Image (cartoon, rainbow, N blue to C red; front, side, top):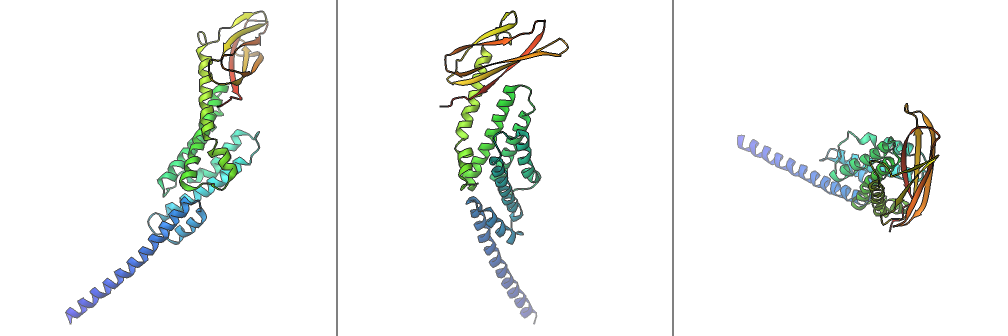
Length: 281
């Protein structure tokens, strides 16, 4: 009698184990299918499957992946639809508002998490650039943050088919990545070239009554426009006056002379420059 009971229990246990394995294999297939859908850019379909097997492996974290990719898509599309003269601070804050909910969440795919972090870093770099007092520092920081964002989006596009059917996105972000990198280098090269022509931390100005002049040569391979801005102040930093000078289409090897009006009194001055319309080849 005892032997029969033991045999019955063993048979029952074995049958139960077989049933459990069958269910697991089904989840495996669904899980793999959902992962495949994510790489194909079908995030809603993938999320639906992950929710059906949400107690399986890291399905909960994979749902976060899908939620992030969907939120990122809305964020990027909304930014593309903003007018060219939109307030930069508002643009950045709007995107951050879409993505801030994922800050403390666990992602299922390490690549997606990495792209998320890189994109947030890019947004914050751009946000920080808006606080810069110097025009060049702002210009360089904004461009640096843009490239961080573009590189993250390029990774999502190639690895997870992010917005692959959005022609405007592909044109504005994916195809423009190389150009934006070259533009950042152009800013650096032009600024470095002007800086090399400084004398004791300033341009070699010639001072005359009511104006000052300095000649600068373009030693780079870029053609560009530039504007110089000067602010004249008293010793207690009260502003006396301001002036500006612009030069356009400065070709490689070309020299130009900056001419700025000066006030009829002793004063201090600060100047800065803004680079525009760089020709990238």
